[in-house]
Length: 489
Image (tube, rainbow, N blue to C red; front, side, top):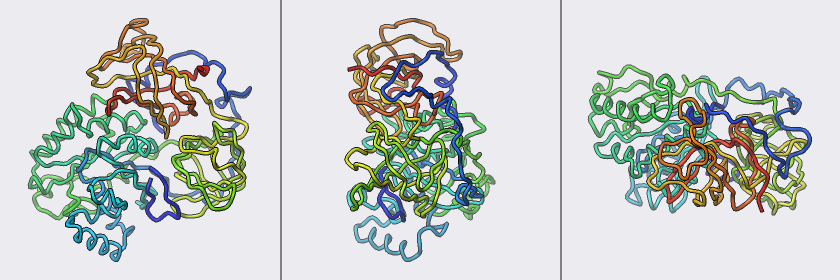
């Protein structure tokens, strides 16, 4: 991910989907390469030293901004950061000048986050940009995700870290309809993916309202159509906030709207107040540390590397020993950075940069996981999954080749068994060993991956047990890891 204001460049918990989460599978996992006598789930609580950093009054909220391509996600993010003083007037003037020189004056705010030449040339976000701002209740880590369907894997890598999300919708005539279209609308796919990552709270930012004259009728049409789809995705009505706004015209972002056309019918909160009203995410501080590595930077000093990611469980302090899986390399935490500031400790939910020393840098990569030395994570290529099929045209069969995503890992996968179909409401088995799987069905399957990955059962760590399956450039299924099975040669 691109980290605004960080000293290094970085790349790209609630319950999961009701349809998937409500089903329980009571079976024990086989022996796995990394399994040791003491199970992680039975481990003693990790001792945490409450430094000033751990006692921080502001809760951290990881907020993903997602939505269809050209809905105005980067412009909204840039404008919000500028209004909150995170982008200086001098920097903004520079972006405006550069955008005008290339004949893209309206892209100035987006350029605050889309910093690469290719992103600016094409006018689209390609990687996930990271920025920070504070509200009354939260220290917000903003994850601006790409909307183009070619970059959904990048969006997945960034949005898996989210506690809540802003789904940006273009109110323009035709644009909203393209985003919600069954054949390839990213509004649909992003909403489904966000739900699969365990995000229950979502703000629907209906952007570009100025293009439709701040029409209440248009707002209601979008709310009714999209609301029906979100309900089908198992979002609760009470967890969805609807905010009409215009990022370009600065209407309803950090203060109430000034335009009489919007003010005449909308008396709800502005976007900043909506963010502040979100419920604080639950964190698991007591378990041993687990941190999937999102990206890394090799430092000039031998045996030193900077890794970044979100701490899923536990806490970390300078001087701690950590185990990098699956390479089993031991390392020492030399220093920590949180929100671009050097700190002594970090806790579950924090997005941090961890500077490690005493390690073979060639044996660390994105998708690896930092663990407590006594409690290594499971490593395997063979999993049992509980999945919910989306709107698929081609049935899934034994032997089907898929693209498997979990935390920051992407692997080629093959379906080796279809164990059963499940009732979507009760989660009970309705049919054993079906020949194929069709759209909207719930099922238990086994997959074998091309490479070995670090993974945890969803019941033990939600963040490392949620998966998505893709094929032909589309997400076709969302699921949970129910069993980590013995590796297959």
